[in-house]
Length: 76
Image 1: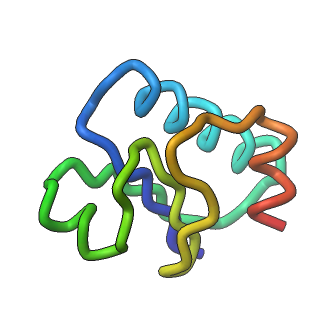
Image 2 (image 1 turned 180 degrees about the vertical axis):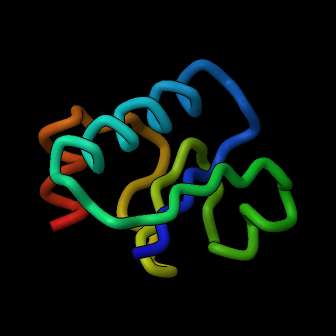
């Protein structure tokens, strides 16, 4: 599973990365989590508001930080 956190490094982006890493660890997922900060790369996903969570190339959420339990549902 490929997970990408799209964001420029703001506190919300950092929080999404923390919550996603926690959710993946609690679920015992074998995944690669990558932080994407380049605006050109972020825009290539069609994302206009960060942070965003991308799972296997599909944007699951953008513009907000879901709770850890909600992230688990998105990763399931």
